[in-house]
Length: 145
Image 1: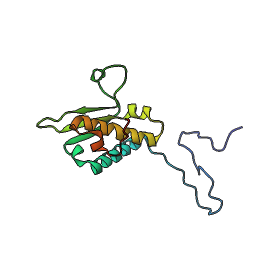
Image 2 (image 1 turned 135 degrees about the vertical axis):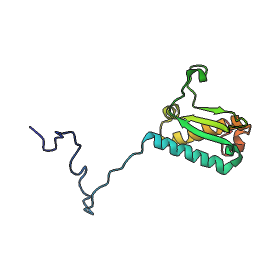
Image 3 (image 1 turned 90 degrees about the vertical axis):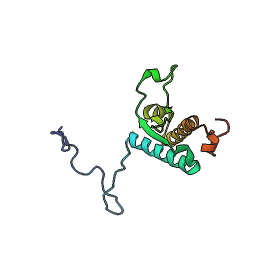
Image 4 (image 1 turned 90 degrees about the horizontal axis):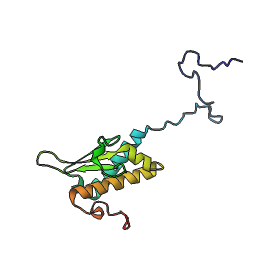
């Protein structure tokens, strides 16, 4: 039996996706989820702002970037894929921290854990790059980590 809502010409669904709210008679708006890359970029931005607030000298001459995955397999040793990389500053070029989106996303179960993992990874890379301790950069860091 043919359906009236059949999508014969691949133009997408025609008509409303949900019935109007039965109390207000207003159309129901469907929630839009953010793309994973945008969620990750927001997590990086929040982490940078937290570090900038607690220890501005840690990000003073450091560029922070995001890549999907590490490009070269020779950039790390062992069987584990790195979560981030730090490149020391030279006279002409500021220091750089690169966070790898996919490895970090795969290790986090949800967005809250992803935000914490991004922040913790950023703090560790900045500590290695600047010579400051993790607790100088992030006073709220756990003692046991």
